[in-house]
Length: 84
Image 1 (cartoon, rainbow, N blue to C red):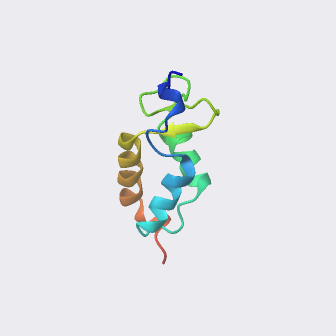
Image 2 (cartoon, helix red, strand yellow; image 1 turned 120 degrees about the horizontal axis):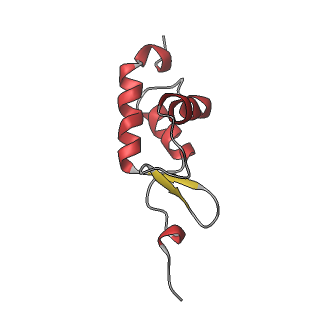
């Protein structure tokens, strides 16, 4: 049996990125914030991006590079995501 790249998770699910941002203190960063970032701010086409790939189970996996972009976005918009 051959294991394909799309069978092995190498990156982060959206929920893991949201959890990481909350852990880092951006407690108001939500799944909706995440979606707005990749779809509206970055204008990423999930079918053609260097920032992730779809696994065999149809779940999208985001790269380490994309996680760093999210961290930068949160740090530049602290007033939106940190507790008051």
